[in-house]
Image 1 (tube, chains in turn red, green):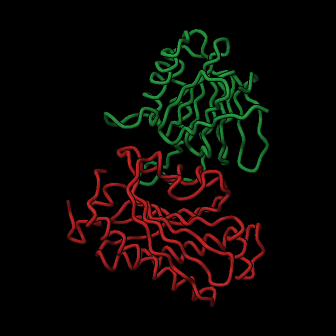
Image 2: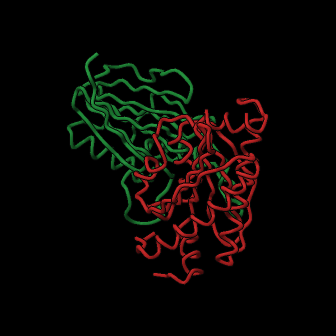
Image 3: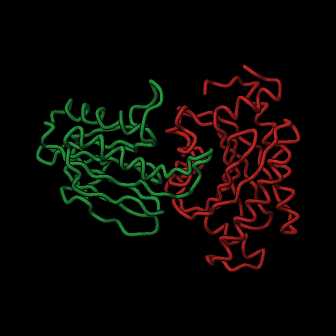
Length: 196
Length: 168
């Protein structure tokens, strides 16, 4: 991927903004609680710097990875600090650390990704589908790097669209990442009329 | 314990050291491989953080692809004064965290392919692999001391000494 212009990054940030707004609304409805949504980051980084842009490499997190199918090759990755994932499960009446909790976090990931990707598809006209979520608890660096590696053969940079959702009144936040393959980024930008 | 300077070797990077008090470190290897080369007699060590098996294009970070990372790491070790016959390799990582190959017919396990590509490149260079902690589904962290010790730690596990040596 070559460098993106600030206009292109603004366009991607706006997409992420609308996508995470929709995802935040879905989370809020699911929990019956208010959810704050951060202003998203849209950054293009050398691969070596991509992990630290997401969080501390060694932090134990639960990652829900959802590869997309259809008109764009990308992976949606939700990252919860382990305790926050537990808090989220407790709000849904599921005991943290159990098999049910893992499947609940996967399902939350699915619902949020479907909202985010739905609004992205509506704005760009891209036909996008979700594939089943995979949930793993491990070091943040291992999760992020393993996802990036699947799309990194032809590129030395990563585009990261990162939004943070925070449940009001709880120590509970999650990062919502969209990690598109370079061809996917070009496709989005073309649809939005901000090609290089 | 003497304080150590940690040198982070991130995705696609290579670092070498002959300075006592330094440690080369890759945190959170998932499908990536941390390849350590050590010359214990001279107190020289190197670490490559390999992401993928084979280069598909020119350029890019030296450590990204196994087929380029191994000769590059050997060359940087040689520049610090090692002889090739003194080099021993330790391999850490290559787990399968997710199955995200994507695309038709490519349900690929990058971790396994990374490990075999690294082993093949080491065989070409005639460097023996003396220890490894690879495969499985957990992330790992590798620490490599110029004095020769190589340590590995799995997520949620204890640190193990893969190669005994001086931790300095």
